[in-house]
Image (tube, rainbow, N blue to C red):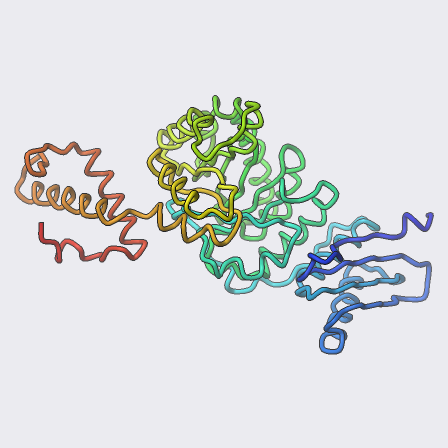
Length: 408
């Protein structure tokens, strides 16, 4: 074997790679393991980093090698991911070096959970993951697709897998966006066994795309003896996907939401995306209608201008008025704006209270008809207002005992 074939590399070592490390491993014929460490915290953590690195090499039966680590404040799970990725470039092994789950990451999710905001984080940039949950997004997406360079996709899988086990998400729904096609199918082995809540399926165009993913998830769950639910969120990003939106939305009972990705959609049309969104109105309405018909959540695209909070607020209000129930975000500062503007406002809550109270009074009096003032109110309207109040209660805007305090 030539020397070039005996050296592997993984990780990042540029000026933007804080919280990360760069690992190189060169196999030798003999002489044991030589360890080299470059780190600003070598005095404090050098011994523990060396022990971790040697234990991982021993786990994979690598007995003779030179391992060099350039550390820029990487957590142990990041170092382990980088080393395992480098090792598996040199040897074939089915073994996985896994830390135990931290207890904070063992919570489940559910279909009805609020998904106002979902924060995208590049899957190969671990420092962005450290405090993301503190910003209280409804969901955190570890992205294996567009945010990861092609040459880095394989090593990003190890980071994402280890983050699912070792990085505190602070109660956010744990999401991963996989790659397209067969690459995405391969991604599933790195996330399904590790308590992922929602898998985002990019550039979905056919129900068959969902069937393939579901089949592989079932196979992995059977092999790993897993019983927890794993939900899906297809992302519609092309003209063809828009036309097939309802077929996709009803293709699996595990689909809890469907999103639209407007950057790729407008590129597919060959038009410029605008804040007004007139160029994508048809597509957004088609996706919204498909979601509501399928009884799943409709999720709008990300708003790409992270510096314009006023424009974001207007975009959220417009999104809500179309029937969307959440949207993506690419910066933590967008989260609070999204939450505030998707939440029911006080006028909406007061109107809902009036209608729902009238409904209860009608039931109590044995009447089948609900009236508010001089207007008759249909059952679907009552149902919609019940949802508004449920949302307000769950967001802490309204007391659960509002009826006992209500004066109409």
